[in-house]
Length: 79
Image (cartoon, rainbow, N blue to C red):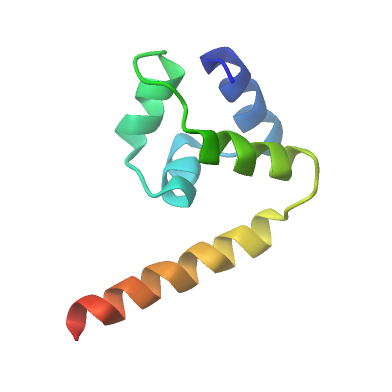
């Protein structure tokens, strides 16, 4: 996926740089580096976006899964 393809998919899915950063577990700055072509877009991000774009994965399900993982990580760090 090229940076311009990434922008098109993000726009089509109405996702912000912050949204995809949260989903991918990176910073918005890292997403900006993908969009500028400074760093390559990880395969996992490409696959997630393709699944969302093809309606094989719902944004609602993905957001809930990410929230659960963040909560689990927070609980583990407090232990």
